Amino acid sequence: MSLFQEFQNHEKLLGRRKLEAMDFYILNIKKNLKYEEIIYNKRNFEEFEHWYYSSYLQDKCYNRSMDEVSKAVVDFTHERDWDQFHSPENLAKSIAIESGELLECFQWNSNFDKKEVCKELADVVNYSILLANKLGVRLEDIVMEKLKENCRKYPVEKAKGKSTKYTKL
Image (tube, rainbow, N blue to C red):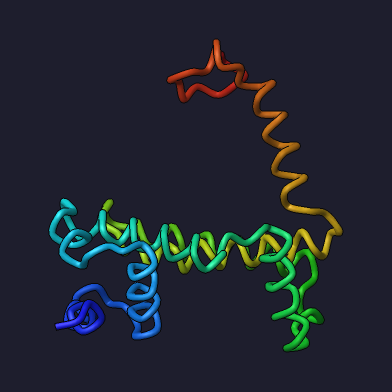
């Protein structure tokens, strides 16, 4: 049985699409790895998945800059002519609504569905990108500015290992 055929057998278990399975096959041909070395020498499928996606993303150059992600989100909105509905106020409301949906993933206990959490987190980030765009600011800039402010408020020597508010440090 070929490496690709063997992987297809495990495709359902891992929940992968055929294209990803083919990419996996090609990736391992390039690296001259045997299927058995990848699966059976790994401690568990989680470690395998992490390794697979790390390699997959690196090989496919999926490392996108924030500018590319922001452009894709803004373009998506413009293509659908939704910008007319996106006032700063409406976008802020949408961020709050999506944040509530994110919080709902953890509502009754700490057991959560990672895929659902990621979907809701992506919604929050998408609306944040759109609000930053509407305000004419870059997320990278405002996040770094806030980080500088937090560094002043929470110096390592006073805040390390503490959850105390900066006014009480």
